[in-house]
Image 1 (tube, rainbow, N blue to C red):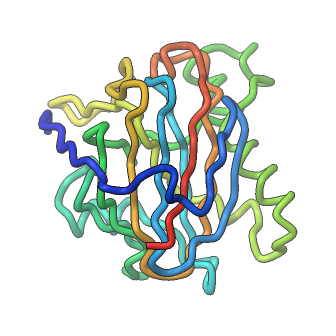
Image 2: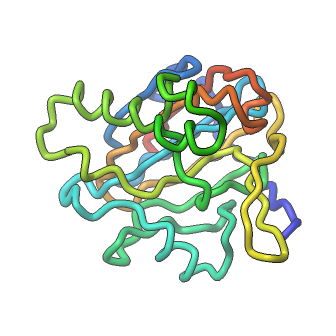
Length: 217
């Protein structure tokens, strides 16, 4: 698929009930109530926001890339996509998207994947998996453990699928100020690692901040 589906939002930043900037390489965890709307803004462009979602009432029932792709019959996520859990429950629906498509196949970087993809001396580099684990550990919610790290969404990240079925990591398709916006259907925990990746072009080799805003409807 090469078509980008761009849909703008009518919501204004000044009406948001929550507004926070997540610095490059930092993480964020937050609960959304049913009906609340989350916007993630790529402030400078070419950033990747690695994101996990959980049913807050049943943490073991988390976002499922496979269920979501199968339901919508599309490997890319964009406006109109409903994000499903492992059990098939509807978590959120993407209601606006000025980037146009997002990856859910490439996964999150880790110390181990950095050594396989780049070089052994990258082992100690900052990575998304460690940021996820740090955020869970600091959340004071003992229900979430290392085993709850599941396949994620890479908002704003460009991972084209080749005709042979392979994945490539390409220069970003997002621009400064591009955003994705989604409405929660149930109580949902959002866990973000604002990717610190310096070794592939997903961040233009320059990780930058993202902004998160929340509206009550």
